[in-house]
Length: 57
Image (tube, rainbow, N blue to C red; front, side):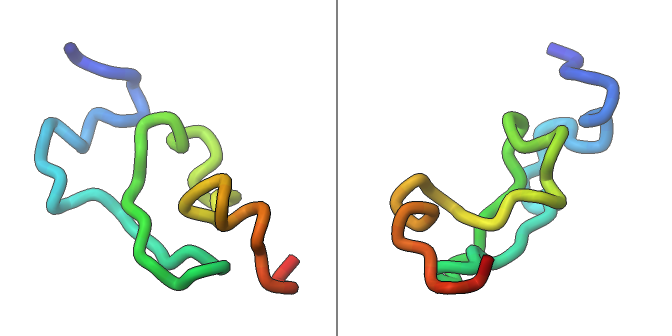
């Protein structure tokens, strides 16, 4: 239950997770463990937003 070394700050407190807006819909998306290795490159909150992206690429 320790998680990976890069996520040692989380410790179950979801209020302290980073977030950023989706470039397609503008809704805030919170950090997810599966995005840990590429959080800086994550732009879309879902596959639907990725498919329907506005011309932001």
